[in-house]
Image (cartoon, rainbow, N blue to C red; front, side, top):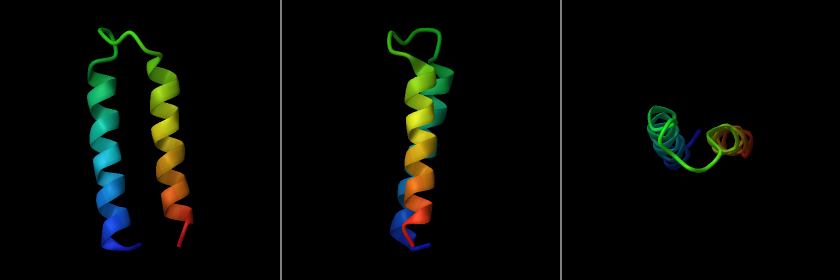
Length: 48
């Protein structure tokens, strides 16, 4: 994986952790958002 992809995945994981930590106060559906991040990470990994 390229450094750019790795950096992007790391940033998405940070965002995911933030949303998981804030889950009780967010008005959006956390499960959908977190699943979208997971799917995005898998998509980035598979693009090699």
